[in-house]
Amino acid sequence: MIQIQPINAFSDNYIWLIYNQNGDALVIDPGDATPVLEALKKQNLSLKAILITHHHADHTGGVGPLKAETGATVYGSAEESTPGLDVAVNDNDIVHIESMNLNFHAFLVPGHTKGHLSYYDGIHLFSGDTLFSMGCGRIFEGSPEQMFNSLNRLKELPNETMIFAAHEYTQANLKFAMAVDSDNSDLQAFSFEVDKTRTGLQPTLPSSINLDKRF
Ligand code: ZN
Ligand code: FE
Image (tube, rainbow, N blue to C red; front, side, top):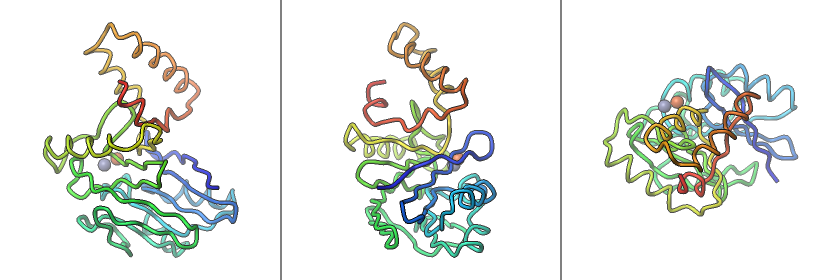
C-alpha cells in the first residue's frame, strides 16, 4: 500500500510525495527542496527516488539539495538535461524503484517540452505539465500536433486512471471552458464544486481520465 500526498510549492505547484509503510518515499518534480525536506522530517520518511517529468526549474529546482541531503536516485528524460540525473528514461521504459517495489511506465509526451515524460503505475498517472484537470500545458518546445498526439496517448489509459498533475490550474481552465461553452450545466456544477474546494485551499486533484474525457 502506498500513500500519495501533495506538497505545495511556489504559487500553484504540487510536488507529489509517495511513501509506504516502511517509511520509504519518492517525490515527483521537486521544484523546491525546503517543503519536501520538511515533509520528510515531519513524517519520518527516507527519500529513495526523485522522478522528473521535464526540465523546467519549477519541477527540478530542489533536485540538487534533495539528492545531496538524501542520496536519492534521480530519474528524468533521456531527451532533456536534468540536474543530478542518475537514470536517463526513454519512452516506454519501466522505472523500477527497487526499495519500494514500485514500477512506473514512462510515456514520452512531447509538447510542453520536447522530452516531457509522464509516469504511470497502473492506476495513478503523474502527468507533469502535459495534462492538467480540464486542460493541457502550454506548448513551449513542441508543436500543437505533438501535444495533440501526446494527449491522445494519455487518453487511451483506463477511465479510472487518476491524474496527478503538477499544477493547480483547474479553476482557470474551467473559466475558459465556461467562456466557450456557457450553457453547459455539467461544467457549472463542476465549477461550483471546484470553487468550494479551492475556497478551503484543498487540491482539486487527482482528476481522472474519465472526468477529462467527459468535459
Ligand atoms: Zn513546465
Ligand atoms: Fe510547471
